[in-house]
Length: 260
Image 1 (cartoon, rainbow, N blue to C red):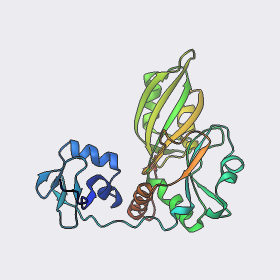
Image 2: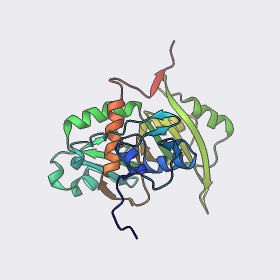
Image 3: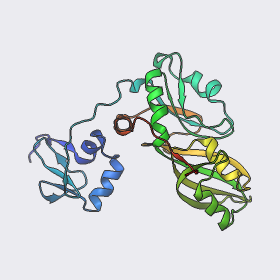
């Protein structure tokens, strides 16, 4: 039996390290037959080397590793509970060697919660604050009672109090909470803040209990991160974030003014 070590890197890991997609997305592409290696359909767990030709939908990929963020050690992904103060609760517990002053990127209102991205690097914080205006984000909103179809349609239109229009890509109705009249709604938007999401629902007469952010750009709130806890970004997340930053326009926005 040949016991020589298998050379090369797993396909999912290579594409993720290049900042092209998450490993889960790559697995979905492989199952769908969208990826080929040297002309043959790719297999889950397949390893590739520097001479292999990888294509997605017929397009040849350059699998040069994107550099992960040099300041990844100062980036933290937090799962904040609704009502908890980020600066007085989670931030004081972050490792002090990450930096003395932490900045939250597009923080959620204190009454709400979910995914929070915090960094101790001021230059990076400024870049992220600009970039998130054009990034997709997902939210779960708990409302009192079921929203009629006209209200849901109005939310999809994205009108805000200041006359601007939020780009709402989708709105899905979740299951009602047991023994209560509350119902969850899940929506995906472009460049929205937690404040604008709450306003979007409340201006349609919805009684909003809480808003939870579940994703921000390439970052997802995963089940392994419990409420009130935090962790550093993984190498895969850092690579995806670096790719999203490099692809972000100099000035972006997730809303459009309704005036012509």
